[in-house]
Image (tube, rainbow, N blue to C red):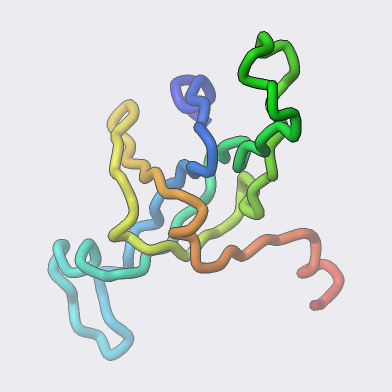
Length: 124
């Protein structure tokens, strides 16, 4: 991973994805122009960084009067680094780091993930 990407800290439910390049040819053998893939509603990418999740509010009604000495608790995200994600491209924000294209989405834009937890080794 690029050192500049390692320095990025994702906030809340945000996820940094490395989009996968689309095939330039259809199953029937037709070649697609470069702009066609970008118009697709759903894209695939690899999860590079994941935010901490959704903050959990304090149960103490007077917590706003106290100094913030307690660490903030989060509900973690379901997505993990290394997952292959199918996501809604319309909700993605594109950024470029050292000439490489990345996209930032919220967890609600992720439709599903493919995670290899060693299931292939078991034949599942």
